[in-house]
Length: 98
Image (cartoon, rainbow, N blue to C red; front, side, top):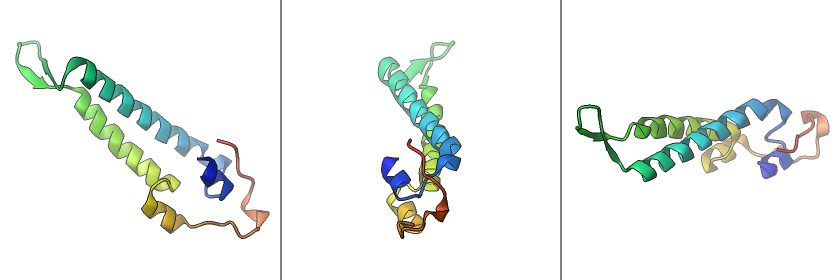
């Protein structure tokens, strides 16, 4: 994030998007930890083995993080589209420290 702030790709107005990206990334870690702790398959109430329910959270959070990463210019493809406004023009507003 600091590099994107320095390049003026991110500003204080983007804090909500950065928070959503961080939340999705946190959900990915939590889901992976649950799967690692419990195993890929767990018994349901009938004693049948089913895929761990955290896989649904993992899938949704990964998609969400990917969308926010692209929106924030955190992927190679999105960075090439966003470009850099490092042309010395300070009229773009002040960047914030993330």
